[in-house]
Length: 255
Image 1 (cartoon, one colour):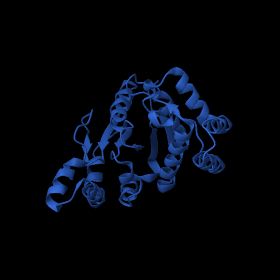
Image 2 (cartoon, one colour):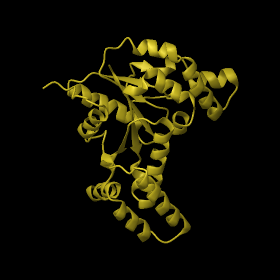
Image 3 (cartoon, rainbow, N blue to C red):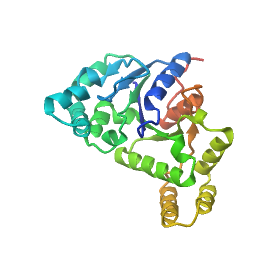
Image 4 (spheres, rainbow, N blue to C red):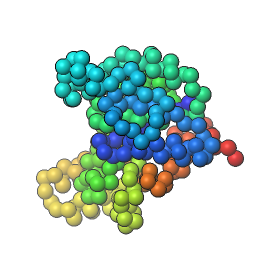
């Protein structure tokens, strides 16, 4: 049975680029992977999706037909995806593949907070699904930014209650020292706490520290996996975590 890998992250975090690069890496490992675009508003994609929600729903058409602005039309599109889910699933079922790489909408809240996304996940098969959350390197360079990003990823996990992998996207944009620092923060809450204190004692710092304590106490504090679509690095680590996620999951790469 195919496994569903949902790529989720804030606008500009690199979901579509990562979808293309991850598929390329999988194919190089003799793994079959099918790309699925769930963004009705996508104008250009760096890959040709084998399954494309725009075959059923397009943002510009909804704007014209309903007389809505971009924001209202995007919300309606998210709900229309759920209404067309049976037809989309019928197309997915025609593929004999190992993985579906599912590129979610650019505006993360459309997938994270709309009830329609649960319809999508359940219809595709929740038991065979993993969320891969892209942390934007521009945000997590600062300790306070990392806390905000972790909190946002935790909110996403709570919404869907699926196995979760946190990655540091676009790692090639960071220096080796910056990457090491961020990864260390993501594995050592005391180091992150000290970095927060060094940023200054402000009401926001106090709140960040309390957020950090809460995230750690409920077990959502996880190591960020540095990944770069540009140089195709880190995919092996992500793949290994995907396999570990599924009970009894085996490496599908040929020996």
